[in-house]
Image (cartoon, rainbow, N blue to C red; front, side, top):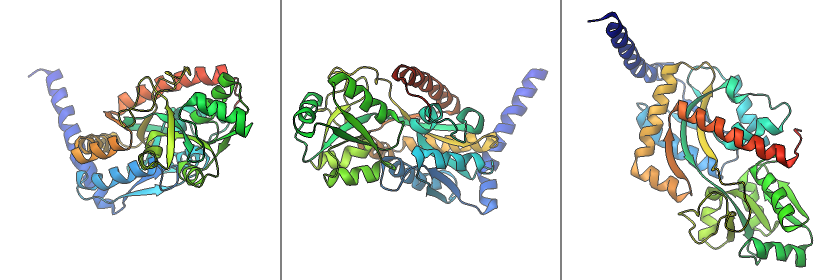
Length: 326
């Protein structure tokens, strides 16, 4: 046997041992695994995290997996907590593109740098955002919404889950395209935004398709446009913004799980494999798809590449908008 062959076999054996020892070390510590979520209970991110946490328990040998909601500042608070957490495999962060790819470009001092402070663990899915109107707003598409604002409201308020986010930039583009006086009204997550939309306190809102799914099906609000290059399987009747003349929002955002930088590779790999196995389960796939997600596992390297590409796309959008970091 050659020396190189021996080294390869030793490395493989070491990796296999690490994958076995990682959950054993978790169990011996007596600590639960905590998944941070930067938005309140009741929103899309929270629903995804709770579904995965419940299923991951079995994949990790009966380990307790908890969801810890730390809402505020578009996920910034939760991200800062992840950075400060011990890199011991017990703290993770489930989030979407806003916190990882956009927020660091629009906030002067976000308190974290994803590339320096976080370790990608697993990508879960991609999704798209959507524009919806409340039941008192008669519009059925973007053109009708623009006409309604001009004729009735004069000034249109559109709720968004967080400031300086994809939805806020979309509000700016809609205002320019239709020559409207639109203002983005930031909320602390999608749950309070939905509450105000359902109560007809605000006529329109932009959030993710998963956030709107249930109330769209129940007829309590009306989605009039989705972002992305094609219509969503969960809402085939709703045209894309591209179909309605709004370009630049075709690249779909993503959901991913991150650990603090320096977390042992054995933990990262073990948890990533556990996520992959959970996503293969038919009931999980069905539930996530029903939320409007396009399920697709990404390993740590693939998630890092997706993050980098998406961050680059939004660097161009932010630069062209003239937005200055605040």
